[in-house]
Length: 462
Image (cartoon, rainbow, N blue to C red; front, side, top):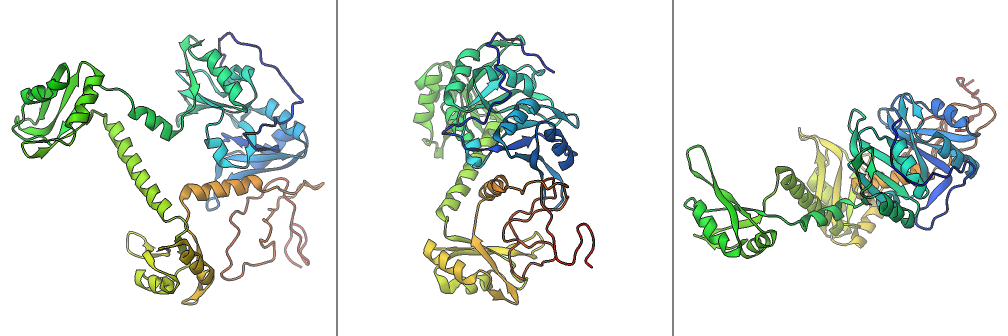
């Protein structure tokens, strides 16, 4: 176990603590999220480990519905909040199949985990510091909801991590006391966690000295650049990039002594014409920075398009292979003006059996959804719903996972799965065209067996 050498207040151990009640973070005081699970960990192992602390109501390792492979996290439910708090206190970072597990209270709303509330970022950490060592260091400043060291594919620390407290006061206290401190002979940075958009805004305001200029005339020389850019401040270098034969590549770089002068040059010369050529002048960027900026622009464009069509775009599946774009448009055209209509196809052009129809107003889309959902088309019932972005679907499914409350353990723990309310049990079939439940959890400890007349538990029908 890694040891952190830093002077700090001693952590207070509260073995009988209950889940802290905070106004900003909502979680289930009897339900624990267990992350960083090795893919070989089973429900039984999880049940036995947490059963050492107190009687467990249920456990479930979340798995891919198609492959059955573990997703690396699961949930453990107790009946008593004190038992859950004690399990978190005693078992957090316990190795299971040679990999330390990470425990936190299960939060109903995934957006809270991503909001950055009371979340701090620590960098320049010594590579020997692990999750537990980081947790032990920061636990002196308040109750920790989540603590994680970022690691690579081989499990080695990347030198930075995150700690989320249950209050902003605790987070600020940790920043004030530990930022700039030496931890294992390395000075660490401790500050507020910034979301991706906030980091991009901050980086866009970063000062720079090196300026990139493109769309130059082939006749433009280094001296021309020095003369034009020299009007805005002292220049340390200016160069037009050329190929092996000395021919201009029509772009170059100008480096200023002062960052403010560089900014003034960009503002004044970007878009200005020289020799009938409109120059682009901006901050010189690394390749990774340019790729990141282009990706961000593309994602923003996609997001804006999706937001514009929100409530007006319908997802349609279970389409017959004979349905193409025109036929799909004909099916939905009676309900309003269609902006776009497309059947999704694989690279070889074969229909995937699904598509999208976008209307001009949300009212038209709602009417089409009500009329066309489950309607038979070429003897197949259509499934029609409002189109959702991938992250929205994932957030909804995660919320459903966390809200599902498995039944209590019977005296003899069976191994049969529990189905959500409204889903068929054993011996039943899905009606043709009926949508299956969004989530059917894998068999796990704590699920009550569904009994069917004429069938013995664990045996075939009589």
